[in-house]
Length: 145
Image 1 (cartoon, one colour):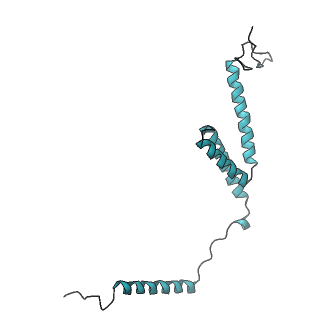
Image 2 (tube, one colour):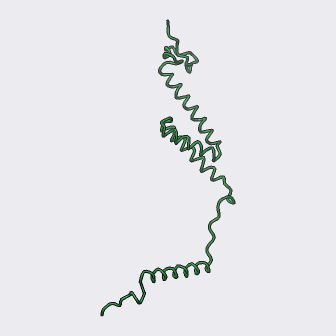
Image 3 (tube, rainbow, N blue to C red):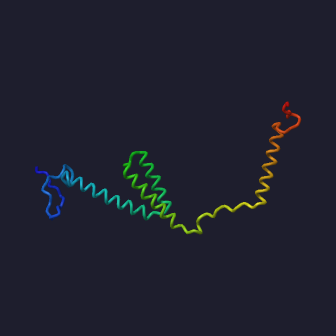
């Protein structure tokens, strides 16, 4: 029985004359090219999905990718691509957030509050020093001259 020919169509629109690999549609050279093209199509689709994701979906995808890396279900290169595109998408989403939705800075404390806090700290320091015997005339000895 004669093995089937490679099904790759060349640039001159003729079929490749090499024999196909056993159980495959293409010869060795074209099988490798077909796999590269398939990977490129999958990668383009993945990047498109990530760029169309909202923040929640993006975070879930990142968690799934982390899990896949830990379980060795995804190559490091593919995981790197997913992380890189996802982080860029996160930055884009954060840039789209209107200024009104960003948290306001904390209010500047009033002078009266600062003075009250300062007095409270001084009182606590004084109480602690009295309890520990510092500046207590009963326990504090004067240095000898």
